[in-house]
Image (cartoon, rainbow, N blue to C red; front, side, top):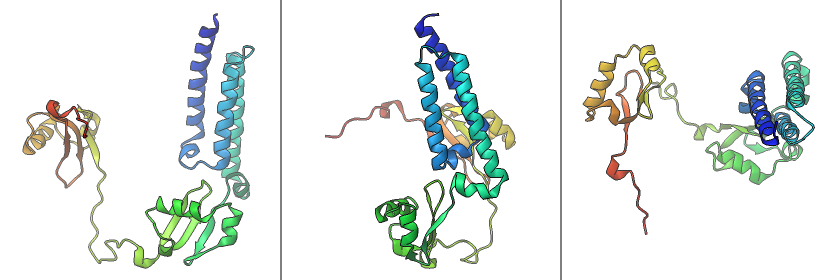
Length: 237
């Protein structure tokens, strides 16, 4: 087997092996990644990369590295789920950095967080002034959870004493010009209803629609394809 063929086979195997590992470990590895998870992912990728370019390492060696490290990460995950006392050490714990509108400088020093970094994290939460914050918690994954002071909170229907309304989940009926038949069947929407809804908004056929979204109780939301004469954008001098 030539070196290129061997590398091709090993890369394909490594790709699918890593894919399976990420599925086994679960979505929290991405959505709630901790510093330990991040470093583990880097090390796993480095181990696989080194194995791919090692002439003495083949598929068995790559498989051994991936499986062994995957087992270690999975065991750590199980331990943190089963034994609550280990979570602080393995996953970290949230830290209150603003309490009753006041900065807790000791906690900021402990977490190596300076004021500029804090302002950046707050802006990601649409908070542009520390004076708006009642509580701020630095989570284990490095994000900040914010509870604004009452004067800066968005009023809810309950605050305005309005009657509650049914919450409906939007569903995509047309995506990239293709009708999603499974979603149509799930909502018991016939094709004739879709075509009629499209015509009501001034379009002749489903083929003119790039995207369509249905929400119960609301008109069909439609985004058409660009007309051919508008598909090319001209530079503005």
